[in-house]
Image 1 (cartoon, one colour):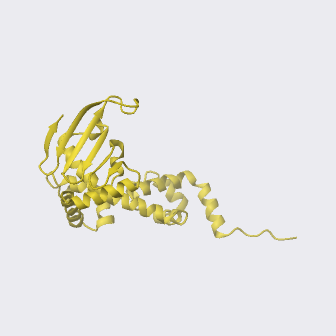
Image 2 (cartoon, one colour; image 1 turned 90 degrees about the vertical axis):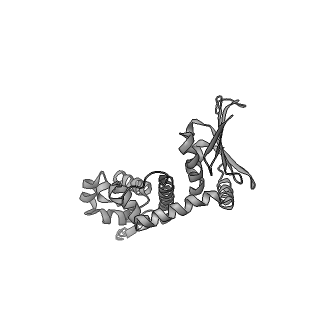
Image 3 (spheres, rainbow, N blue to C red; image 1 turned 180 degrees about the horizontal axis):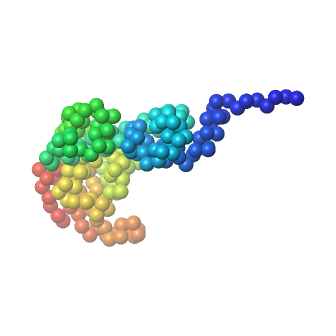
Length: 232
């Protein structure tokens, strides 16, 4: 008789993952959302994880062994970008003392930037870059290469407002500066970033998604450097 070969470690791990798939998938999703290892105080199903793996670090190590690190790197970069945009736009308000920040935000700062001063300096530098047309042009070209909007070389980038969150951080900040005056930009259909003039145009149409040739019913131009506003 031939002995049945013992399963390999990879096979055992795959079987273990399949057994606890719902638990691990929830933890993985949270990891991707935070862009960093979630803290035990943030994990809702911690008791079940401890029961199965003994500790959260062990569960995270096992989960990482079953996933592609490139996915985590992408999630980390996206979260860093979100933080830079958040703090850059927050510079228009009174700066909050570190002790008054939400605990999860403090963990983000520690994980991605080491300390509060570093992220504030990085956000300030990025905010100043919106006044540099060459930086705006580079970001617009990059966005267009990823299929985000209609790009006219060295002139403008136009896109649907639902795509704004996918833009490079500098463009999200550029648009965010306009939104600080205009309000919620999702009330418009299209946004147009003017590369050289420092302007932002927001356009609203009559049933933009439902009609083949919708009629423009409102257009607002915002001059970013001085936040001057004109409605047409």
